[in-house]
Length: 122
Length: 130
Image 1 (cartoon, chains in turn brown, orange):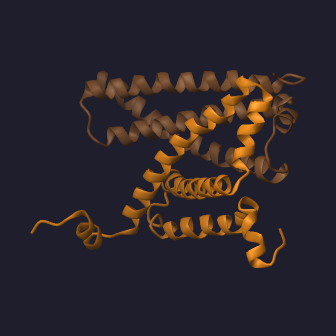
Image 2 (cartoon, helix red, strand yellow; image 1 turned 90 degrees about the vertical axis):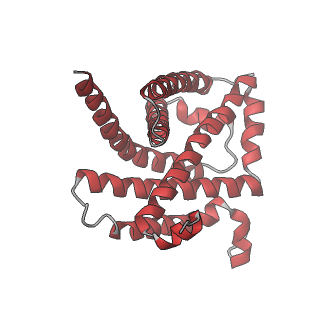
Image 3 (cartoon, chains in turn green, orange; image 1 turned 180 degrees about the vertical axis):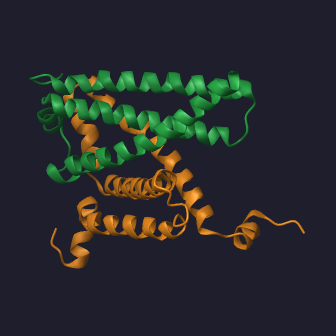
């Protein structure tokens, strides 16, 4: 039973790593286009705000952030797993990275919010 | 006979190993970048002027080079990741090693067409105007 659940979790992580890879490939191409080609450098608060006032772009950024954080930290977990940690250590890595990931996504959502409001931020 | 890492690398060299190492190094660099990226955007908590100042710092020769290196890491990791994905999902395992050359070709091509956009200071060197 324990083995079965662990295998399902590992397979899901393998699968999601590839699914997020495809989503991030598309998302990052758009992100690079928007920030390097569609606007004049340098990036300013107003230029970002103009885009993020649209709910569609806000959703795009939030989804891209979530996918990137999952993919990056899951990748880091895979790297750590390659060093053959004890089951206890593996558990600590897994939960530690999950907490860091959740905190990073929540913090990302919090700091994106000032860009979605009309007017300036001082 | 005991071999050092470099000797072993030379004896056992194969493109799959190189792809594995580059994927890992670029992956670790990109995870580091995500943290740095969120940190630089978090400057908004100090007001929009503070944020604009931070973003303006990227608009410098050093900033341009960092962003171009970021582009290179993203491109290589992305094309190699897509190679791994098609190998796994679309049963490309017989072609997977030959696909490594395409990872280099495609990331090189995209980097080349983007280089002047990312490092405008290179334009005058090629008579393309400032």
